[in-house]
Image (tube, one colour):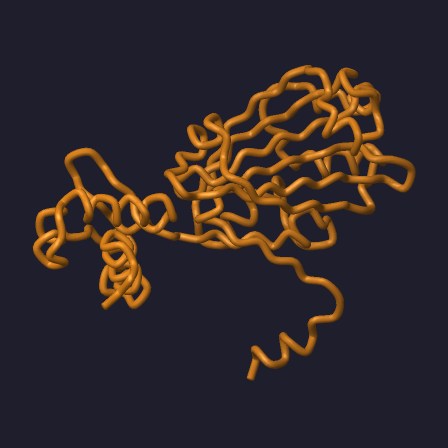
Length: 257
């Protein structure tokens, strides 16, 4: 006889059925009454088991519509190619990567002059509270919220590259725009972290209970100094990031066989 609480037994049984495909992505689970009869448990017990799966990000609940297995249409981002101008891509790297994956990109922009937070100032090597331009975009893949991206450019750089402060997108992408002015980013420092979302992040990315965010902080450098710091916040359930480092010819040969 299991020593686990009954609600945990309900959650474990349903989790196994989700894992083995009995209930696939987007499938609706049986009603609380049906599950109560199946597991010989009260509806409150069943509800506790279902709530546990909601908190773990496996299912979602809607008022009057019951419980549904969360869809995981994962988008894969190659972070090592994302802004590498040696790779053949035109325009904005995000739009290019999404289109190449056979998906549909959409994004909205906000540009403002702001004070530089300490976290960003440390990476840009400027004084906290000094002026910077923030380019903030809210990005979607197939109309599903995918990420937010907040990029700070120090004031001295904006004086040399004034289009950074203009509202709206830069057609060729900011990296190419800066390179065209002779401000070429030759190195990047990446930092990866995870945590639960803030209320604002949960709202913008439409994140349900139990789903973390992936934070990708990238600082871009010329040969002389840092020129921008970008913090991208991804939905943890819909994104996967990879890097390609070094000579991967052996992998490509194996894939061709």
